[in-house]
Length: 321
Image (tube, rainbow, N blue to C red; front, top):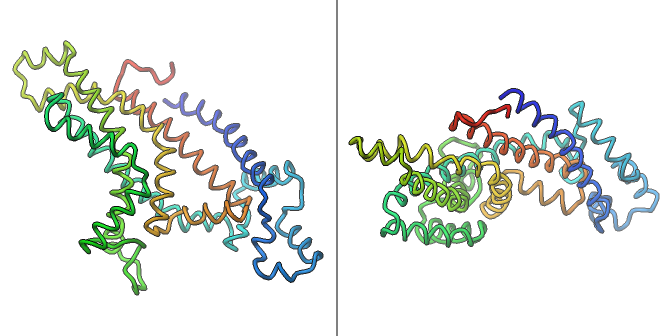
């Protein structure tokens, strides 16, 4: 396990370097001027000398490669630079928002895995039955539904029509403090929407895996020995049927990140979505690079987690093979 994790860590270094260089290259080719975005309306009346000085202060007057390499070497020492659009250190921007994005993504991921697994097992128990037909049809429908559309639909129904849950934000309107109960209430809708948007893939993988496992000789033998149906389903079929689903975890991380950005925007959740959009529009090189590295690292960790879970669930798979 340690050897595989070490190999993945070494592989991640050139990947992250390449990704950050791509961010700087794309930003450099962008028609947006970070100096004008930083100066705002004051840039309309500023002299060319002042704009050139501001360009030097922001470090965007340097060629692409030196600017990128300066950011990489500084980031290696813990200095991620300053965000021109947020007017504060990049590390502070991420620290203020990453926790809320992690809370949303982790809650939604838990909802998707648990609910998808439960529905998948129940549907696989009687393939072609009424529950299987209903849940499978709903899963295929949700696959085609964008996360932002589900969010708007949830706000209309639960917040506006029923008035049961808040429509967005982190706390109630007019509240000066962030309390756990308010956060929990405001988390329900965005977490459910994000979780439901990821649920179809887990459901379909578990359903197919468990249905195939129920046809295996080992599971048939367990039934022939008189084991209770819950024991056969959960102790034999589910363990074998979940192996394909474990490989799905890593591949869903990019989709989870993209969905989280959309959901955060719809529900005004104070995560990294707003910072990402502003950094892209304003061509904020340091913040763009840091957020991209963060997303790439999450994808790499998700793939590593999939391999580790698969190896733990199936002892026949070697970690160092």
